[in-house]
Amino acid sequence: MTPCDVSYCTSMKNLPGSTPGSGNNPTNVPLPLYIRPQATFGASQGRVSIVCGTKPAFEKPVESVNLEVRLPDRVTSADPSCTHGTATYDDIGHHVKWVIDKFPNDKTPCLTVQLQLSSNTPKKGSAEAEAVAANGGKTMVALQELVDIHANFSVAGVGVSGIKVETLQVRNEKYKPSQGVRYHTRGGRVVVRT
Figure 1: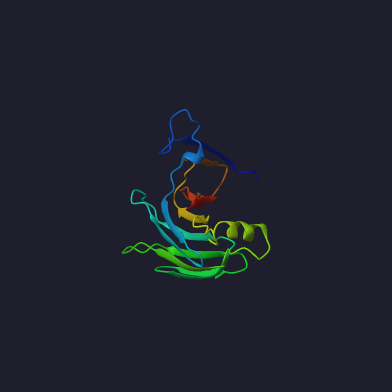
Figure 2: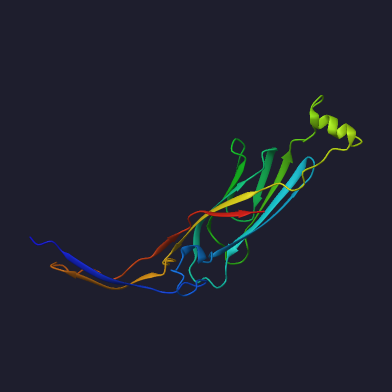
């Protein structure tokens, strides 16, 4: 029995957004989806709204989109609601997980999270309480909080590395192998910050 011999030839294509001679750096690859967050915070309440959709120039469907919205530490409770998919709040990890299996054709999915925040009033006798008293009793409210959104997605039939298989030959086999090459893209680590 002779082992099968496989030979193949690959080619690199220039990626959209990359310049020739840059080594086709995969960090220059544009995302096939957009994520637009908005966050507002008050003294005891806040709101985070996220719109997520596929870019119109991208031909292949983006599937299995998972967004993990990491909320500030002073969040005591959150009430997520979404127009498409499922959204759940994890109170131990202070994050909301939004899962969109497939994007609808008629509207853009939106996630809205109503937040209850703990008061940032300083404790009696602390240095912060003395600073508040010196300021005329006015407390400072942190209106700008940081919200991180970690995104994972997959796109079947697309290879974003730019590597394409041009030819594939299988020798020393008695059966006829089927023709075809499959490409698949999975989103690695995408972080969007507000």
